[in-house]
Amino acid sequence: MRLPFIEAGEIVTTHGVRGEMKVLTWLDSPEMLLDFDRCRIDGKEYKLENVRVQKTCNLVKIEGIDSMEAAQAMRGKVLELFREDMDESIIFGADLIGMEVTSGGEAIGKITEVLDYPGNSVYVVKGTYEYMIPAVKEFVLSTDLENNVMEVKLLEGMRSDEN
Image (cartoon, rainbow, N blue to C red; front, side, top):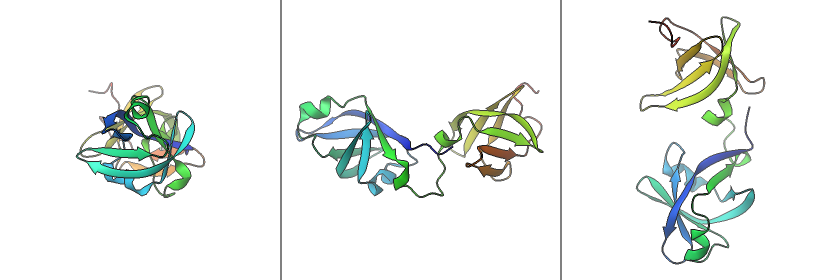
């Protein structure tokens, strides 16, 4: 299911005295945030005046946040992006939580967690058994966001209670 908003990162601290904030990004890379001109924080929409990359984080200036004190009040809050501003072909891990997973046409459970590893992500699927399914095309045969169903190919060892 496509979520209307994607959590992009957490505001961790202020930067300077003019309201700039440091955002620890949860996107694939900090550069991804450069493509957006608006965000949402605590349910309120804001215009992104300036976004730049600093190492593994972003420095963000939001319209209306013009002092260190105003920026400090945003600390610890989650910066969200509007899904409608993103390419339709992008699927985020958050879109997959709760998705029904089938193998050979039989339901095996729902995705409860997406684990990110350097090589690839792994989907944790819980049903009668728990499965750890690598998010690669050899095992993920299809993903239907409209019907909230994913078809996978299971191999021995993917079930977490198997030896």
